[in-house]
Image (cartoon, rainbow, N blue to C red; front, side, top):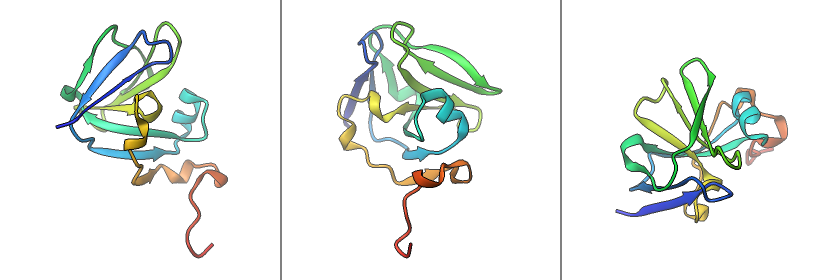
Length: 125
């Protein structure tokens, strides 16, 4: 199995995610927009036990009931999502990986909250 490495922008928080991800998705929810400052977030989901923090672990805050988001306490880079809806999983922002090109999003989630221009156009449009 493959190990995927990554870090925050300053390198204070480094990780290894072992194996294949459970999913790769673009999330269009308003909470992700607020947490990242982006139009949507691309998440790579792994079993929590397949992630190892190599230096300092991220700091966490509760962004909504049952949801905690991880970030670097030094540079503020948003890194992770974990919530009651997906127990035992940790979702990592694609941009935190050393080689994000190996991950291709396969699904769009919370599209009812998406900015109109941020959704992929259908073939007939």
